[in-house]
Image 1 (spheres, rainbow, N blue to C red):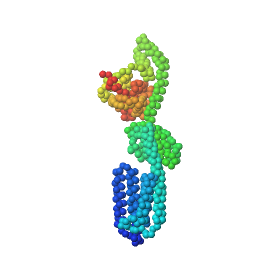
Image 2: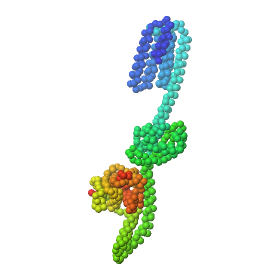
Image 3: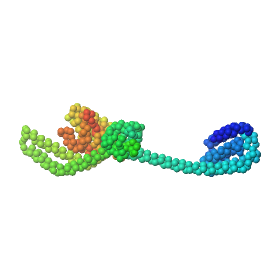
Image 4: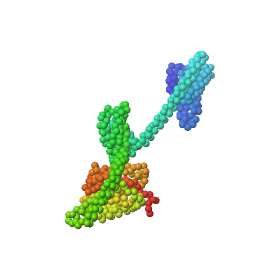
Length: 553
C-alpha cells in the first residue's frame, strides 16, 4: 500500500510542480520499505513474542510514514493518509489498545513533523519537493487536529470491528468444533449400531455402508460404493416398489416398507435379512435402508417350533407308553406261549413268525419313540469320540448287506476328547451311517472327516441347511462331517429331515435323525445338513471340545 500511495502521490506532485528538488529520496524510501517488508517476513517466522513484535512493527511503520510525509512535501504532502493505514493495521491485529497506541504515535509524529516543518527546522536536501510558502499556523493546527481526530476515530472503529470479528470467529470455531464432535458422534453411533445401514441416491446407487452392513453382507464400502442396490441385493428394490404400490417419484417420507428376503453374502452363504426402506424427506431423494441378519432368529424360531412339537410329543408319549406298551407285552407273551403249545407247520408257522416279528418291531418303535421324547439322563464322562466312530465303522464294514458296493473312508486322525455319553453318541453316528447307506442303494462312497475349530462361539441348535448361528460363549469345537454320494435331498424336504416321523423310505420310522438331533442337542452341540439333488448329502455334527488339561490321560 505504501508503494502504491507513494507512486500515485509523487506522480501528482511532480506532474506540474516546479519545486522538485531531487528524486533520490524517492529511491531511498522505496529501498527502506522493501527492506523492512523482507525483514518483517523473516523475523515473524522466528520470534515468539508476537504481540510485542506487533507494537515494535507499528512504531517502525509510523517512523517510515513520517519520513515519507516529510520527503513528499511535509505540510503539503498527500501521503498523511498512510498514518490511517498503520492505525487500521495495528487495531486489526492488536485490538483497540494497539489501535490507540498507533494513533497516539501517529499524532505525536505528525505534530512533531509539521511543527518543525513550519518553523523551517528540517533540512531540504532529503526532500522531493518543498512545502508551499506562506502557510499560516492556524491552517497547520487545523490539519493536525483533523488528522489526529481521524487517527483515533479509525482506531476506535477498527478496534471495535476487529473485536466483534474475533468474537464471531471464536463462536464460529466453537460451533465448528461442536459440529465436528456431533459428526464424529454420529459416525460412531452409525458404525457401532447392530443393524446394517446404507443410503441410496436418486438413482438407487449406494452412497454409504456402515460397519454392521459390512459384517452382515461381507462387503466393504469400497466394494459397493456407487453400485446399484440391485447388484448387491438382487430383487430387493423391485420387491419394495411393488409392496409400496408406487414409483420413486411419488414416494413420501411416510412410505416405510418392511420385508424379508434371502440373500447370498460375499462368502457365498445364504442368509435371511429383514430390511426397511424409507425415502428422503422433502426434495431430498436419498433413501435410507436399514437391515438385519435374521438367519439366527429364524433358526431360533425353528428351534422353538421344534421344542413345542417335542413337548407335545413328550406328553403324548407318556400316554402311549401306558396304553400300548403293556398290552403289547401281554400280546407278545401270549403268542410265544401259544407258539410253544401249538404244533404249527407250513403257512400257519410262517404267519406266527410274522406276528412275533412285527410285535418286536412295534415294541422297538415305541422304545425309540420314548427315547426320543424323553431321553434317559445317563452319566456323562470324557471319552475319545474318534475311537468310538472308528469302532462303529468297523461294525458297519462287517455288515454282509454292504458287501463291496459301499466304499467306507475314515479321515479322522488322532484322538478327539469330548464330554458325553458314549453309548448315545455311538447311536447317533450309527443312525447317520445307516441313513447314508440307505441313500446309496446302487453303491457309492461314505466319507467321515473331522476338523478342530479354535476360538469359535458355541453353536445353537438349528435345522436350517447350511446355517450355523452362534451364541456369545466362545470355546473350541470339533466338526465331524458324514458325507455320502447318494441322490441327495430335495430342497423342499431338507428343512424337515430332523422332524419326528418324517421319512422318505417306505420302511423307515422317521425317528433316527430326530433322535440323533435330540442327543446332540443334549450334549451342547449342533447337527446341520447340506444337500442338493444329485450331489450327495453331508451331515455335520459340531460338539464342544474339552481342554487338554481336562482330557483323560
